[in-house]
View 1 (tube, rainbow, N blue to C red):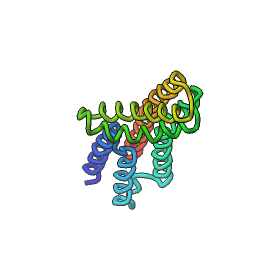
View 2 (cartoon, rainbow, N blue to C red):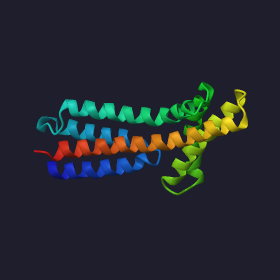
View 3 (tube, rainbow, N blue to C red):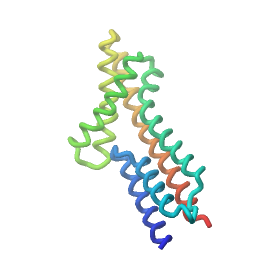
View 4 (tube, rainbow, N blue to C red):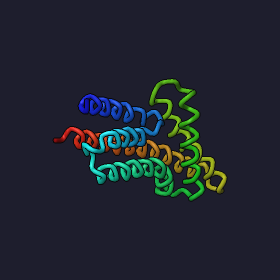
Length: 171
């Protein structure tokens, strides 16, 4: 029975990884599924506590990468702190709004988050008294930075999936 549940865990984690691209917290779902499995089979010790702690740290790191990547990009291209905050808020709102407006899985969320980061940084830079060119540059940095953050978070999810699968199936 253990191996059936182990295969189902790998499948659930694979689905969770894909859901991460839709704006759903896939890395956290992966950690939740793995934690439930580890609890159910605690006597068999399929996962060491250290493995679960590393997975928790990776999930948190992935979120931080995604959350702050647009803000760092805005500051890198010369934007203000106000523009960085606008990029973070705009990325969140854009992802939520465009997920419903563009009904193509993954595409609507990613495009929306990047456009939202762009718009948030652009508007906040304009409100800070920056010129149009500087504001657009900050917005472009935010959009590109958010796209990079989404991909980095997905890569962290892949690393988590590999760690879980190896720890689960390694004798």
